[in-house]
Image (cartoon, rainbow, N blue to C red; front, side):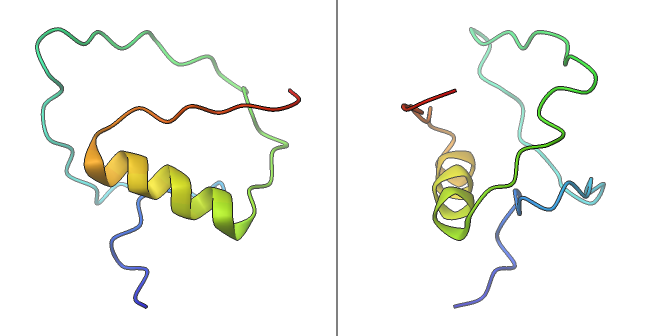
Length: 66
């Protein structure tokens, strides 16, 4: 399976070649907090779940220990 469609890869590398569609008019995004999540390492199943949510433009419910 090709990983070319993946936006999130869990490797902390920013990708500048991504063209995002405009968000829905009812959705407001807060400013990002610098430094948040720098030590998190996603496993392969988490990477697939995040990319599916991004690709489908749907929310992702994350549960479990912080």
